[in-house]
Length: 413
Ligand SMILES: NC(=O)c1ccc[n+]([C@@H]2O[C@H](COP(=O)([O-])OP(=O)(O)OC[C@H]3O[C@@H](n4cnc5c(N)ncnc54)[C@H](O)[C@@H]3O)[C@@H](O)[C@H]2O)c1
Image (tube, rainbow, N blue to C red; front, side):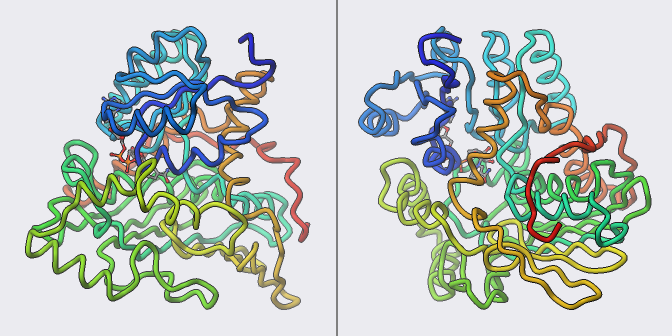
């Protein structure tokens, strides 16, 4: 690493909606220098070049990976490309942040880990909601024992995921499409962080309810940790009821207000939706980019969004999100803990900080390939359990290190 001081020189591969979501966190970061971007769509490359005039722009992942001035890549291409692009990047000696899901199968994930091990590069299986400040604070409170032992976890989401504009591969389960592939990483990373990492078994199922959206829009699972702690997760992406409606301070919807959801559904049923146009509008330079990501970034009240309602029950109390932090219910009543920096760019920067500290400062990387494989294993087990209608035992789980986030300050503690 040279030429840019202590900053990590990052290249983004796949500058789509997921890419646009992390760009504001990279902008102005003292740790990351976005020096390159690659995408197969010329219009996207043109907007990227205009916005980042100092960055180099490539029309393929391979060309970017050959750039010797790139230290690490942020891979946010469609799911089917995650493993091939990660292996390619490792072969070129790049450190990697890989969007969720890290791969489509355990075999692919094993190949990714083998390639990064062989190349001695860091792999971070990243960009999940487990990085957010309230979840990490919950983890610290559980680990501290202040509320006694963790007894149960429940995460429930009702979203409009299936109504958002989708490319054909996003609706093809064989290519990693649908809610289970896309959303289990958020919830499973979160429950594994809160519960200590070691899931034991999964009984779950998926639901594919709308022929006009031919990928599963629903999953549910009952999971147990090695120590017997029970957990349920659920995501219904069909957008009739959305969890946001339960939150007094939220605007009550995620991407579309209720009347727009009705309209979108009618268009989907009639086959009149201009999906590609709508999707491009959310990508870099699109008319909806700022509207959507402007709302996601900046200091903001918490809302369930795609992670949903999270309730952690311990022997002596419960925890859930509050507007700016956590509600903690204990034997003395309810405490609202203001975490202040919860929303926005700062919490997304936590991911950038983790890869920066690993590569530049030599610190341990927590969300590594083995952590990502364990999360993927549990997500795939939900799908398998649904097909086979039986409980699936897990074999690739890894524990949260005892000192993870040890220096995170939580006012309640
Ligand atoms: N972590 C999150 O919260 C979050 C949010 C949104 C998306 N994502 C992830 O981002 C990924 C992409 O989803 P999206 O909604 O951004 O889709 P998208 O289609 O908007 O983005 C994919 C981008 O990759 C480009 N691309 C496709 N094939 C390529 C190739 N071979 N080489 C280079 N570029 C290529 C596309 O042109 C597009 O710009 C998915 O894996 C998804 O899980 C994550």
